[in-house]
Image (cartoon, rainbow, N blue to C red; front, side):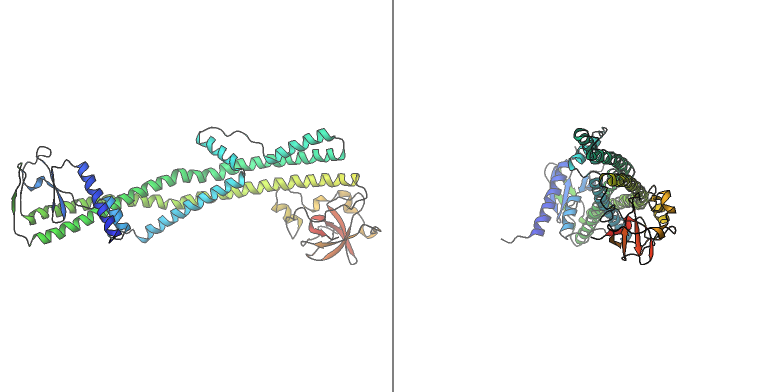
Length: 446
């Protein structure tokens, strides 16, 4: 069997075209003439004052369905849009796709639990307020407080649980504020674009696509009518009488002349509608630039809220670290005060002043030293007989005063602690120089 896919698609398009035409037009007689369809209307249905060939309506084959099918298989011409318009379409599609991805991933960042995200989505679609949900930090704080109450709040372990629970509770509250701020300032504008502006753009693009199909159909109809008119000029005039008083009496050239005029008129109307719809769509697509500006502002607000959140977390954890460090000497008096590795990187590798400006609310390294230690005469300090350790410097550090020791990254120094000294500081020695050094800038070696 000779299976021709293009011919099959073309025949299917013609079949659907005739079916639609026959359903929409009260036709008494459909007769093929010159490869086209002539719809002869009954005078009782569509009376004509002259009773001549004006009672004939040229139906023709090209309609939107057939044109779309033929375009897909390369059998029909397609009205191409200009390059600038195509670029606007491509940019709009890219904006929509990346906005969806950023929105989904930000939702995952703010709420990792998929079940909770589905619940929030349902509440939003039902226009109901999302119930307040306990954050993971607040839940952990609750468990720690209950454990301290049951195990003994006066024991060292119970006291530490209470301190950590308070810090985790503050972290949970900061997380809640961050999620709320990011949802309003960043997620809401993205959803508004996808559910509002983009739906409007998609609707107008579909209308433009339909107008283009109608325009191409009118062009094809005019082309076929002109071809039939040229062919009819070589055929002699005819007269035909049909039963039931259906009479077709006109020259073939005059008949196709009318069809060409009608096709040209419909082409002008289709071209006008297409141009109008193209202008409306172009204005909406050019509005994508304003959308980018709005999303840029929202992105800055998101970064600011995230910076504030992490600054609060750093401050809370630094306070907790100081509380635990001050109690560590009382619980374990013979242990070496310090950490085996930095719990958090310094805010700057140049000076503590810059660090304070980078992380708002966080205390500078120089402010961590107690006031009494600034007057400590380091030249009179002797290293303990035991308890000294080697440490590798992680970042450059500029001494704030004469009591501190300037550090260079990757150098090795000797460090030790003195009784009553702030746990965030150690005494460092390099050759014949010594001074206080911050623990967060060091990696203590075994």
